[in-house]
Amino acid sequence: STVRPALLSASPRGDAEALEPTSTFTLRFNQPVDDAEITRGLALTVGEPGQKLPFDLKRPDPKNEQLVELVPRARLPLDSPVQIAVEAGLKGREGPLPAAEPQSFKFHTYGKLAFERVLCNDDMPNHRCSVDGGFSIELTNPVKLSDLKKAIRIDPPVKLRWPGWLEDDQPTRSVQIWGRFTPGKSYGLKIAAAGVKDIHGQTMVADVDRKVAFDDLWPS
View (tube, helix red, strand yellow):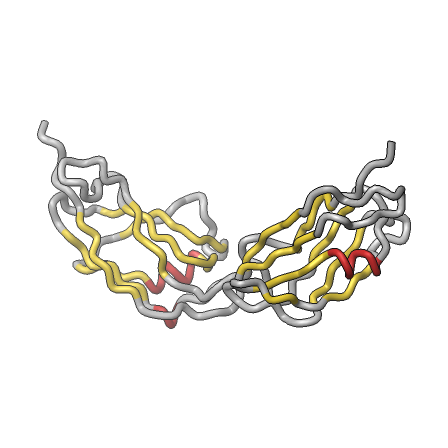
């Protein structure tokens, strides 16, 4: 019996949740599908609600007719959902039966570089941070650890320890920080935005000024 056509995968270059505006997509079908049929039965949409974006098709491997590269004709907008949808009814070259089910593949472009949150182990008497665990900060996009080390200030000052497993020039979205914090005391966490750039070349949108409250020790 004839196999119905289906899109097996739609893969962007790089991170599916942090697409570059110039991303292209490699489509892998279970059988050859003509360009005209793909153009008719497939939609690339951006934003909410989805706006259709025109695209071109390339054949990256002349020996593999199941492989197609989808190239958007315009840059993908930042911080936006992106979807590739295939309608039921798509026809392949290997028989008369069309695709029975619609399919969709969801992605997202990267957004601005911003501070996201402070995390810590707060399984403590008053649900504040444990001094033993320190705290970690999370950003929306990866930045170099060396940038963060220079931009972070603790008030009152504390000598900080950084993860040994992270190289200075290694991009990361989150970093764990330890120091000789005093139980029951709060500290100011400041990050100077101007000194922090993400892997896309964007500077952080705003300075950070937060309080990190450490808990008393458990009664012995």
